Structure formats: structure tokens, C-alpha cells
Amino acid sequence: MSYIDLLRESAKEAGNIVCMGLDPVLSVLPESDASIRERIGSYFSEMFRRMRLEGVAPAAFKPNIGYYQSLDNPRAEDFSGSLALVDVLELLESYFPGIPVILDSKRGDIAKSSENYAKEAFDAWQADAVTVSPYMGHDSVLPFAYPDKGVYVLNRTSNPGAVDFQDQTVLDKVDEKDLYPLYTAVAHHITAWSSEHPGIGAVVGATSPKELGIIASLYAGRDIPMLIPGVGSQGGSAEEVIAMMKGAGYDLLLARINSSSGLTHPWKKGAAPEDWLDQCMNAMHKLLKEAAV
Image (cartoon, rainbow, N blue to C red; front, side):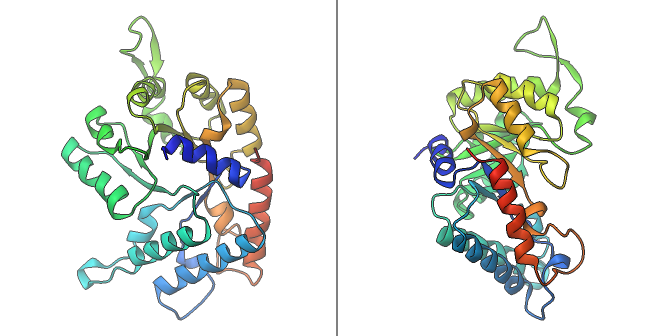
């Protein structure tokens, strides 16, 4: 099945276009004397079990590899974080088959190095999609264009520093008569790449609704997936995002609105309270309702 078809089918099956970020923060997990791997595995196992019990699921999952590998101590032959990610991926396969997993690693290097990073994402971790940076151009992005896999290229991101480079005005090769923000030039390249390599899409933040609307209009009528972070803790609204995409004529089934800490630990700081799972489920039900399709 192509990645485009996987997105459409999983959105229909789940009834929403939510992407759940799975980024473990040890300080907010329930207090325990168990190992790092056991704490993370137990936490997500209990959460997934409750989700299945209540019959709810997002339409994608997105573990950020840095949250896991930062818990490794390779020089001491300790790979607790990486092994915890293995456990989480296996839990997802068991509880949520058919729901795409996006490995958030934001790779982007010279061509040969990108080939190795692509093998890491798709062969080693067996992810369905990966996030990449376009800064080094086509020869750093296209090695990730595996058949039936997804590639989310950073387009207009949700962080405050996005304005430093992404809003710079440039003379775009697509139309040398006009000046565009750099994120528009990147969108033009994503459009061109996706026409030859289906599955290439864009990361576009919910915290910049004007830019999101512009980019969604550029992608309307094309099979270009969008991963949209910034909802929840960063201040973006799922309802506003959906209204924006509908207004632009963009196919909602190809979008994934991401929330991470807002779903996995909505209390933000301190060890998990006794009702932590109820808080997570309440946040999840709310977002799934707002992003229903």
C-alpha cells in the first residue's frame, strides 16, 4: 500500500486526523524504582491498553528519536532509551495495526549520509515515514524517497525561531519574476519532488495560521501530506487548522495534526498525579473530537 493510501485509510478507520507524539519525559512519569526501559514501556502500555478499551485511536503516531536516544549511555553499553523505543514500536504494532508511525528525526545531510539515515528510519526502525530538513537541497532529501514510505520535509515550522530563516524573502527559481518567503520556495520544491516521488510531504506548524493557509492552498488538489505540529501546548487550535485547510480546498485525509505532551502528560510538570491516565484520556477525547473527519 502506498503511503498516501495508508494515510487515507487510517484516517477513515480512526475517524480523525490526529497524530500522537510519543516523547517520554522521565520527570513526569509515575515515580518508580524500575529501569528506564521498564518505566517507559509500562507507561505507554497502560495508556495504549486504555485507548483500546475505550475504542479510540489517533490516525498516526510520532516518536521523536531524540527523546529516546538521549537516555542511552553507549560508552557504558547501555541502550535503555533505544530499547524503550523498540518496545513502544512493538506495542504500536500490537495495539494499533494499520496506523502509520512517523519517526521524527529531522535528518538531512549530503547524499550518501542521507542514504544511511534513510536506512536507519526505514530498515532499522521500520517506520512508515520520517521527518527531514531541506536545507542541503534535493540530494539530501531524495534518498529518503523509498517506495510506499512517507517523507515530511520541514516547510514552515511551529517554533519561534522559524522566522529567522523561513520567512526570509528570496527570488524563487520557480518564478524568477517574483519574490517569495523562503517557506514558499520550499513548498514549490516539495510540490515538484512529490510529483515524481509520491509520499513526500511537508511539516507546517499550526502556530502560524497565515502561512499554513498559504501553503495548504499551494498543496490543494495534490497528494501532498502535511504534518501539522503546534496544537495544544504550543497554542495552536485543531479546529482553526481544519477550517483553514477546508477553506484552502486541501484534502483533510492527508493531514495529521500533531499533539505530543498535550496528550501524553497534560499536567506538564512534576511526577504523574494519581489520575494521570484519566487526564491523558480526557485530553485525547477532546482532540479526537476537534479533529474528527
